[in-house]
Amino acid sequence: MKVNQLRAGVVMTYLNIGLGSLIPIFYTPIMLRILGQSEYGLYSLANSVVGYLSLLTFGLGSTIVRYVAKYRAEGDKEGEEKVIGLFILMYSFLAIFVLIGGAIISGNVEAIFHRGLTDSEITKMAILVQIMAFNTAISFPISVFGSIIMAHEKYIYRQAVNILSTVAVPCANLVVLYLGYGSIGMSIVSTGLQFLMLPLNAGYCFKILGIRPQFRKLPIKLIKEITRFSIFVFIGSIVDMLFWATDKVILGMITSTAVVAVYNIGVTFNSMMTNISTAFSGVLMPKITGMITKKATPKELTEIFIRVGRLQYLIIALALSGFIVFGRDFILLWAGPEYKEAYFIAIVTLIPLAIPLIQNTGLSIVTAQNKHQFRSIVYLIIAIVNVVSTYIVVPFLGGFGAALCSAISYVIGQGIIMNIYYYKITKLNIPLFWKNIISMSVIPIIMIMISLFITQFSPFNSWFKLIIAIIIYTLIYSAGMYIFSMNAYERDVIRQPLQRVLNKFKR
Image 1 (cartoon, rainbow, N blue to C red):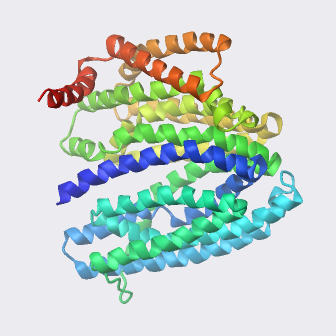
Image 2: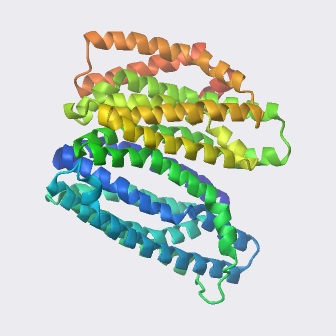
Image 3: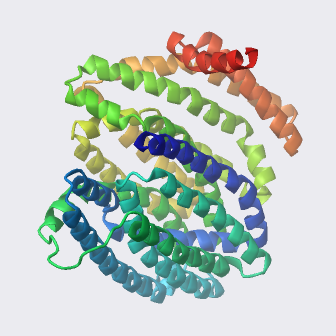
């Protein structure tokens, strides 16, 4: 039963990733046209501001899974229910801080954003922050029950709820948008769906899993251990906020909601490409941990690092080169001419982002070796540098300047410093890795150059032309990489599933 849960959970996770990438393609243009550029920028800005309040979880989500799973493995039901009671109290206490933080931010919107927002936008921003802060506060205790379900390995139910949320949010948003309630209506819908999640998750824990949280004689001594375990997860969350949310906050403070809107569209493609990459590496952590436990040699770790990196690069290079060629026309058709600068913002951030995305197996290796603290500290430092440089550059270069600062920070931290660390400390053969990647880059570079030349004379100014061009590009890329760039292992990865399908048809 456990194996079925795991396999189905993995399939449903990929399904959720697919839906989360496809739905915005159809939903976002409608939302942009109904809201308008300024209100969409305002909504994105409010989300980024309130996002800081989510840091008050202090990275405890994975900690809940760890401790609940630990007590389950030991067969200590009472200990499990007491630690669950402790987490519920901790999260409820933190939720109160979120409400207080939301009230403080809401009361100071004018002082923070008076340079970039109009009077009417400041009023609406204050309302959005209040609603979103309340939404975030509700999500805290809900997340405890979600983590309990994960710790009990009930992947099917957990992913089913996630898929329901992925589909329900945009559908409900479209209803309130067509009714004319705008960004405030969208915020209220999101809060209402959070209320729905609470009985779904809590009810499952109480009724199906038989969990009865205990609030007497709580293991208070665990708080110190829990904090120590989650601190580097917390640092990672801060880094993400400093890189992506803070850029939008600075733009809102100095420029306008329209600039925030364009920037938000540009960086939307980052999460899509990240999902493509992590779908590969996320399932490798147990295997890599096992290799580290069995004292795998640096050569063995380098082999899996390069093997996975090459597979990831096959997909990332297609997505990145395809976006360089077709991204401008896609954004013009999808979002509209007023978002054309989003193409350059996307390009500037996507290219350096590709480095950690094809090397995230390295993160799994250093985590399994318990050497990830250095990475967290480096990322925190470059994220702070990114914030300072963004604040200086934005008055001169706007959204593009913010993207450029993030790109340079990524190259320094993720590209240079971490590659030196992987080479010197983790003993991975980084020169060999990049030799592989450079040799695989010939086909994408040639295709980019030829395709950009063609688009100068024949732009893809209709969805039909664009889709046909993307299909042709993908087929040529796939054939070129298969013939000239893939090794025997990679050809087998493609050939064997196709052969099995063909064999079934022959029967």
